[in-house]
Image 1 (cartoon, rainbow, N blue to C red):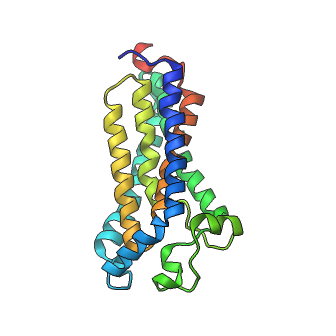
Image 2: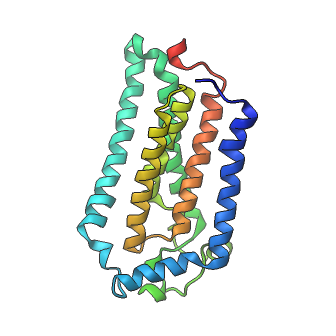
Length: 233
């Protein structure tokens, strides 16, 4: 597979995604889609978060999904350790370290941002059975008036693995599209489940996707861009 020119790479992986993130965020903020969608979900569940404690959303997707993400991270850590022990695996060390740093770093960054953005979950607002007056995500960020619910932590358990796409890109493999589909699919399932539980607005998930994408892109630039893939060394 022929590598694309750097200008095309940065247009496709930085400029277009960044513009898309800003445009979608502005549209959601101006039209109030966060509240509109949450209103519909809340009404559909009978004026209460019926699915907050449901087995599918809480146990299967939230708890088991968390264990799945942690297991994947553990396997990558073991693979990295193996490269220090087994000489024939040494050539894969850089790629595996990238995968670990990009995925773990994305999730870690989301956790840090949750602690400093002061944005509440839907279930915290009076219109959804909570105690706080409703305010949009960016109103809460500006006034530091909310709790710690933004970006979406659970969705990052899927979106963090966008690193698979960049690894596949580096390896010049068509499997990068499988990695992209896996990360987007799992992240979307995790995010939708949390929205059904009243834990997040759609903006929370959108920004988790964006942060994970750009962090993986940053690590790709730092660790892999311009380097030869291991299979060609």
